[in-house]
Amino acid sequence: QQEKDIEVARCGALALWSCSRSTRNKEAIRRAGGIPLLARLLKSPHENMLIPVVGTLQECASEKSYRIAIQAEGLIEDLVKNLNSGNHELQMHCASAIFKVSENKQLLAAATGAIWKCSICLENVE
Figure (spheres, helix red, strand yellow):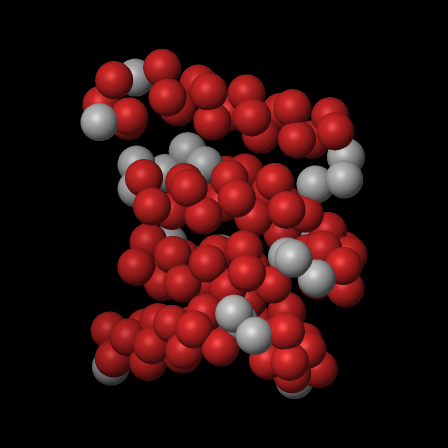
């Protein structure tokens, strides 16, 4: 049953990611309480769940209201932690979301440094 629940949540996250490409849908997701939900899902240990969650945050971070909410919910820390993942797609989406959210240049420099450290290993850049 737990595997089924995880798959249902993953499919929901994929649907949100697809919808989040529209400005109108971003606002609807935010009004419906999507940010706290995405915050909870971002703590999932399942990478196949994390990719659409972070992809949604990445898309939504183009809106100022989302950037403020992402910072207020403490999601930057989780995004930075996921830069350490072995999954290159997840790393890419996390880096992009951090870049869009970051008005704090020190944080941006730290995230850039983390990405650079990941790229030192040839295995990560192939």
